[in-house]
Length: 426
Image 1: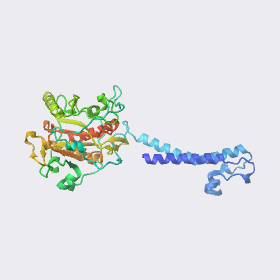
Image 2: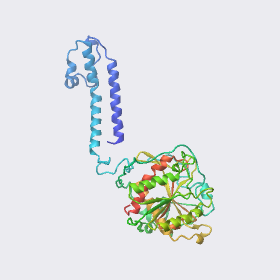
Image 3: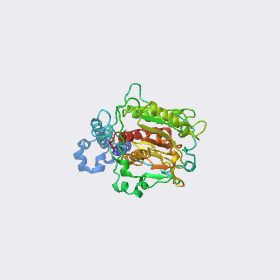
Image 4: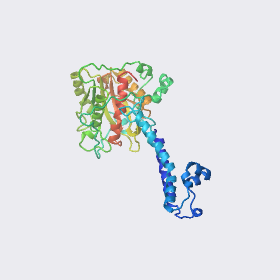
């Protein structure tokens, strides 16, 4: 039964119960039939309906207790009928569910059937990086400032419990072909281009991006996916100072868990710190280590640099998925070209085409399966180490004013989207 119908039935039941209690409390306990209040059914339907529906009420009332009992019973009939219908509907729902808790023939609604998505009001900068981020001139620029906060949210399975593979989610909408074929419509609906950055129709081609086969080989030995954090100190509104489990690193651990236990991927979560004592130069410090990890683990085919964005305080990057407050996320591409200078040859990226195809296929799937969950792909000059792998993804998950729980909740749909694209079934 739908949640709205269930709420209405409960409301009607309680209203009728209160009406019945009021009716009983106002009975006149007298032996004079002429001075008694009319019975419940008489008041609603008249004497004929009363005689037909509740013959017992027509019995001469010779003593007060019998009169009160009869009236109380009559007053409770409607609430009892509504309640019985409600219980019957609940039982039918339970019987219709499969062992994993989802209805037969449907994805589990508590996991992946998104339904309606409610979005909290956002500020004027929705879909954009913060001004501080846009103004940074260093090659390896990124979101600024860390925020420290309050409590840890623990998300873990009971020992020995395995998470079943979740049902395949269904599309919420189809992207019209005209939004993909026209460059202006493509940029309008899928991209946010930084003012310092140069992009054109030769760079952004949806048809070309969608023709890329991004499936990965699951038969290789060792990890297939690498998750790391150039800015590991990025925290959320209620993060605990000094506890990496409550920062973007903890969110990376949750994403790792879901990809491994739910979808069967082998994931290496690299937690080394590159943004201490300063964020400046973090990308340069991370570069040789990530190169070494890829060399040591040749089976890695997907690299994800997971970040947390920085936004104006009035802007809340939050939506609702399956009844849970969920942080919005954004895919980010460094394209090694600026308006003022053109292509940056010293930051050459031979994997740029594949990088852009990966983020585009992820964004398209997100708009179709989880409308409103993602912001537009952000394009900016410089490289951000995205030359390290063809399937390299930089994700900005939430912002400093999101809670840790909201960020953790985003890991399920993010993992589902990754599985759709990497299995070639979007």
